[in-house]
Each structure stands twice: as C-alpha cells, then as structure tokens.
Length: 442
Image (cartoon, rainbow, N blue to C red; front, top):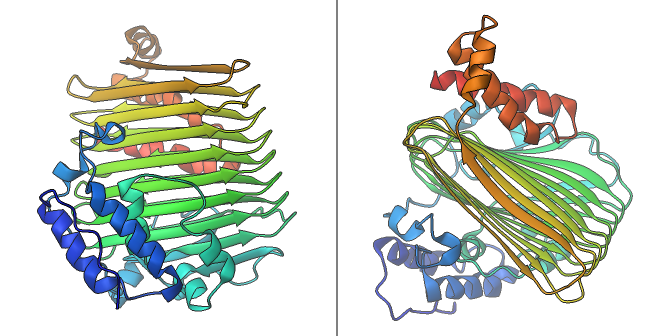
C-alpha cells in the first residue's frame, strides 16, 4: 500500500485539492525506486501548498492566486501533434542534436539519437528508470538542497525528460537541444532532466519550449546538473509560448573544483514565466556566469529568481539580466548571493537592467547579498529606464525612421547578453529571434 500524503491543517485551494487527488492515484505509478522520493516531495509540498505573496521568494509571482485550476496530466500525443512538432521553429536553422518531446512525451521518431559522440550518453528519463539505471536514481532529486514548493511538486509528479551523461574528458561540440512542444489539448506537463558532466568534459545544452498562441497549458520543468572537477557546460533555455501558458522552471546545479557553468535564460513570450535557479559553487575555483533576457508585451509576466551559494574559496559568479517591457507586461528579478564562512577570495557580481517601452510596463528588482567572509569582492545593482531620446534623434537625423531606430537600440540593449553565447550560429539565431519579436510589436 502507498503512503498517504500529509494532510495539511489549512484549507486547500481548489488547485491544491486537485493536485492531492491526482497524486493519490499516481503515486504507485512509475519507477518503484522513486516512490519514497516522490512521497516525501509531495509531503513537503503539502505542508506549504502553492507559493503565494507571503513567501518572500514568490512575492511577485503569487502562484496560489494565478493557478485557479489544474489541467489534466498530459496523455500520449496524437500523430497530428507529432507531425506539427516537426516544424518547431526555435533554432531550426542551427545544427543541433534534437531530442524532441511532444505534449510531455518523448518522441524517438523525431529525435536524433544516432551516432552519438564518444563519451556521450543520452536516454529518456522513463527509459533510464525502466532500465533501473543506478546513476540516475542515485542523483535525481539529490543534486542540491532545494526547499521550494514548485520543485517539490515537480519531484512528486516528474514523468518524462532526459538523462545526459558526458564522460570524463569528452568534448561534445554539437549542441544537444531538448525540444519541448506543447500538445494539442489543455494539459499539465511535469518534465525532469538530469545532466552529468564528468571530470574535464565539455558540452552545450539547449532547452527550448514552445506552444500555440491560444493554447492553455501548464509546464512545471526542472533540470538538475552535476559538473565534476574541471567540467564545463553552456546551457541555454528559450521559452516562446502562448499568452495563456503558465511555465515554472527550476534549474539546480552543483559545481565541483574549477567547474565552469554558463547559463542563459531567454524569454520571448508566455502568460506567466518563472525561471528559478539554485547554483551551488561547492569547491575552489568554481565559476558560474548567469544571464537572462526578457522581451515581453501585452500582460506577459516573467520572473527570474536566483540563489548563488558560494561555499568554497576562489569561486566566482557573474549575473546579468535584461528585460524589454512593452504594454502592461511585468518583469521580476530576484537574486541572492550567499558567501559562506571560509569562502574567501569570492568574487560575485549581480546586475539587472530594464528597458521600459511603455508607461504601463512594470519592473521589480530585488538583489541581495549575505556575506560571512571578509576577503571578498561582491556587488549588486539594478537600473530601470526608457530609450534615450537623444540616441533616437541621432539615428532619425541620419534617415532612419523612428520605429526602426527604437528597434536598433533595443536590439543593442539585449545584444550584450547574447554576445556572450559561445557558438556563432546560436548567437545569430538568437539575434534573429529578437528582431522578429520586435517587429511583431510594431
């Protein structure tokens, strides 16, 4: 018999009650070796419920108020949905190894799993669990200590995703792209991926999410990354979803000595988007560079929340996030840098910059420092402003129309974070996406 989830004493919202009902019917399904992990995660979620404005980390994205109902769990996609996924356009012109998921389900026929590079292993999460892969069960859900209700909910319901392992010393030049395409029916997707980059190895991971403009669906995604000593990973997460979509994503990374992490979150649309990152720099010399860009319009809402945990000496982190907001859109940036006792020589810097294209747009910025070591260099800041009228006038005086001048300046504003992407083909594709997005608002 399955263990009954904890029953909270507070009154449940309709969405929380529905989640409890679904879990009661689902907890015995899936890999038995994860049953205890799932139950413990749902118990943790039940104690707090959906996060709300009283939770400091969720102050600006009240999920309890936003999530009024719970869409049914995704069912296997129809052939028509798979067929439409073949035309998924995000980075379509870039040479990547595409691993495709439609409606929350892995689609081998659309995925490129042939001729894997030496040292590279890629399998679906369901496949890894079905095989009883010991490395997967030993790591998943245990990469970092994350006390967050959305992440706990993902652990309780995680269904499909990918497990990637890059062997020691391997250098994977071709980016691995996880393509997540929403299905044709309203649904809830719980996606979970695990990436292990062994000692001295290098790889590039791209996660792209897209869905129909009017389709209503909910995504709860999580990616766990383990970087062993000297390992390097560049990760890009691109969201281009419809105005009715709700997307919550958790990124958890553990960095060993001299490991290098580059992470870029790029939001090009969605009703409610929240990307939260928990980065642990556990050993000396670990380095994390985090960047983000939002280009929002209408009533879109995007939230970037970071927690950078410096636990060892000589670790470095750099964070730069930019937002372009039009109409009544909103952007949230919350970042906390923790420097633990003994983490001397830490160098940590954090900056959020927001460009407002309309009077109705809003930006909320809350950077924080918590330092328990005395030999460190740490800084944070934020800016909010409009386009420089003098620069617009300068361009117009040289024959450029006002709309094009505004677009050029906006592209240059976002370009600073895109320019840090390593591969030229990816940089060019991201720049093209910015241009397309800006043209749509004119």
